[in-house]
Length: 341
Image 1: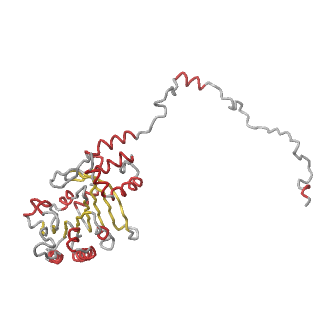
Image 2: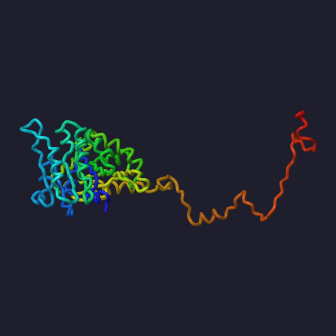
Image 3: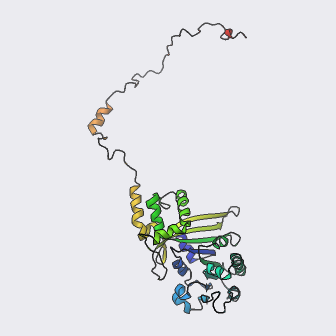
C-alpha cells in the first residue's frame, strides 16, 4: 500500500490537503470522508463546498457522519454568526470513540474571521478537545495556498503532519521536457526537488501550464471519475531515536478514486517510458564514419604481434650499470668538506 493510500485509510493527527487554482484536492478529500470503522465518527464542517459534493449518499446516514453546513454563513450578508463556538460545541457533544474532524475549507473560515492568528488559536483549541479519546483522533484541514498555511503546518500545532499537495501533471511534463528531470525513483531525488519545489511554489507558473496556450486543463473535482493528478507528500513524524523529528517528501499520483504511482498515470506514462529508453548507456562505436570493430581473424593476428618492450627472458635477478658523470664526486673524502663547517 502506498503512503498516500495508508493516510487516506487511517488518517491520524493533522492532515492538510492543499488545493490550488490549477489543481484541486477534492477527490482525496472524498475518499477520506468515506465511512470509517466503528466506533470512529466523522464530523464535517463545510464552509466552501456544499456537503452533497463531498459526501454524496453518505449525507443521509447520520450514524456514519455528522454534517454541519456553514456555506450560507457569509460575512456582510443577512445575520452572520461566528461558527467557531458551534464547532467546539459539536465536538464536545460527539459520542465516545475515535473522532475525525474535517473542515472544508479552513482558509474560508480564516477569511470570515478576518484574522489568521485567531483562526490558528481556534484550531489549537480544537486539538485540545480531541487530544485524549480512546482511539487516535485526526483533524483534516482542506485549504488553498494562503498565508494561513505557514501557521497550520508548524510544529507548535502538531508534531506530526501529513501535508498533501495536489499538482497538475502538466507541471511534471514541463520539468521532463524543459529540464530533462525525471521524478524519483527514476531520477535523483535531491536534484529533482531542488527544481520542482521553487517552480511548484510559483502559482502563475502552474496556471500558465494549465490554462495558457496549449494547456491541458485541470481536475475540477466535480465528479468521482475526476482526472488524474500528481500528489506531493510531506510527512512529518517523531523518530524512534531520541525522539528526533523526521520529515519525508514523496511524489505519488492519483487516478480517479485511488492512489497510483506517477509512472502509471496516463498523461505521464508515455513520457516517462520514453525518457527511460533514451537514458540507456550510449555505445561510443555507433554513428561513426569508420569501423571500430575487429573480426575474429583480426583479433587473432593482433594477439600474435610481439610487444616491443615486453620482457621475454625469465631471469630472476638484474644488474644496474652506472657510469659516473664528470660532476660526480666518487672519492671517499668527506662529502661536506666544501661547506667549510
